[in-house]
Length: 175
Image 1 (cartoon, rainbow, N blue to C red):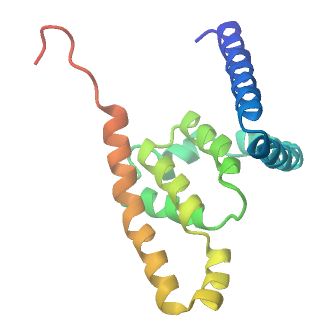
Image 2 (cartoon, rainbow, N blue to C red):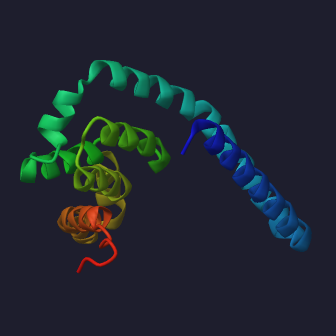
């Protein structure tokens, strides 16, 4: 999509979202004020977090070579790439929206779709710093069960997402 057309689409999406938000706020004033307050809190969080994320993305773009990403997370990385993706996704703390620009950069630098999916799933479900707190409050049995399922399932999810992503539609007349 050309840059100008994409920008137009972005503004149209923002405008339609604002109109929908305002209409729902008028229909449901109590929930509308609460939604506005929550949206404002998220916006404030984004204003402080996003600049740091953009700086990190710039550093990643310059410091990490495409060849390195392809070697460790590319199409030929195999099981080692999937395991590395799990590890990379479990280490950071912070909201998931921080991982999306990094995931986009990984794809641009040649990372395999399965590895990026595994990275995002691990970021969302398996955060090692949080696991220690979970063990303390919920107990070992619950925490290990809750942790074990995502650890086992993120790799098949990544492989399934990659298969679906790369599935091609047959050309007319082709079977």
